[in-house]
Image (cartoon, rainbow, N blue to C red; front, top):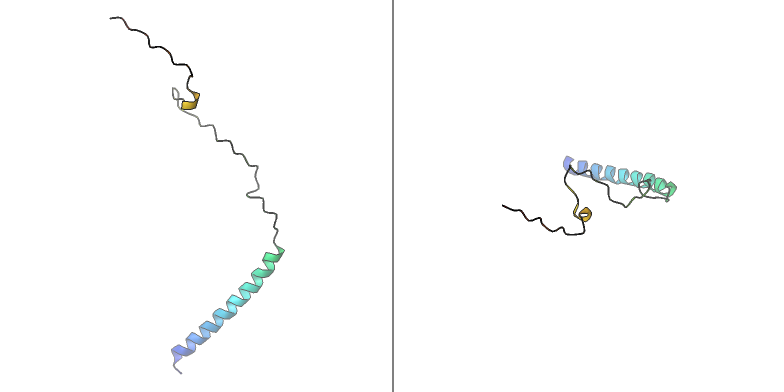
Length: 75
């Protein structure tokens, strides 16, 4: 047989052995694992953050509800 064929067979065999060992090692870890996953562990806060706006800038929701009448300018 050609040396390339022998190398491919040996590499394939080594690959199968490595995958087998990794599968058996991770299977035991997954069985021991804790299934009480509660997310990131913090308190869930669904309120949006209060963003500090520059002076004179307001959010549209904070705008005055009453429309003020424009003042008449005399010339």
